[in-house]
Image (cartoon, rainbow, N blue to C red; front, side, top):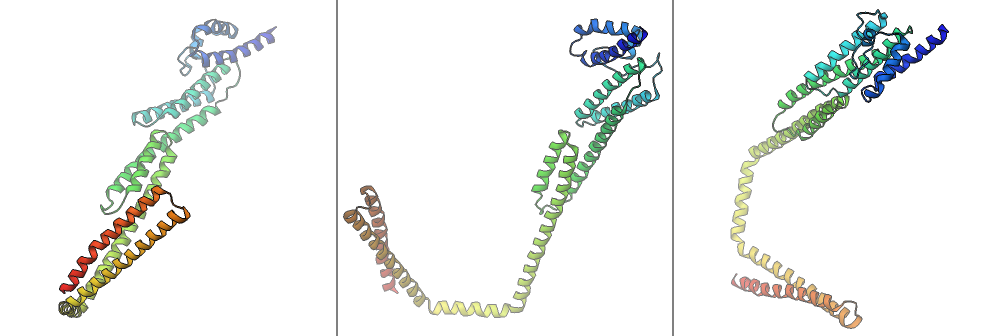
Length: 316
């Protein structure tokens, strides 16, 4: 008979743990179940407080019960994890993931404490894992925050003639990832921003070196050949002064020939268009009239220019 009672009590332990996880969602419906579990486990209201059977789960208070060493170690780990979450919140860092991990660990601790009260051994490995995870998240958050400060300082030292558009874009992307709690991705973007800064500075240095090299080469060339350049410019000026009429006549004749050749091409295109419209019917009436008008306007413009050029040529 005693073994049957013990078995029922053990099942009630698991029922009690389930109660603690669901009480926040259905507090009124679990009142009767709570009383039933307490009776089966022979737990007083004071010991029920140890297990935190309420709609707001907290860590069990072990003032009237001695739990295992693993339990108290887990309580210390959770206390440290809680402080870690608080530090992140005070720093203004995203802490949702850490807080969720902490709450899960807290619920797990309550459940394992319930097992210990029933005489079974609790397993606190999950709490150690979550505490390590929270500590790692906090370390990453503060580390990446420091890297942001270092990146800001690095960007402020970049010369104004260096193009840092891409590093600034990466910095903004890193801030977005950080605010979403993706600290490692934020760190990767920060490192990429450093690479882009170095690349931009290198390109700016190469451009400066090339420009300075070109300037010096030109300066040396002018210093060594300025007398020859002056003589050449003077000779060209004299040449254009003496032969300006011949040069202008040559340019006008070239312009007349070019306009005459263009008019010949346009007239040939008009004849071809007329042939396609009247003989083969390859061109419709609308297209024919539009093209004919366009070609005619071009020919009339050429005909206006030719007499003026010829008149200018006679004056020379």
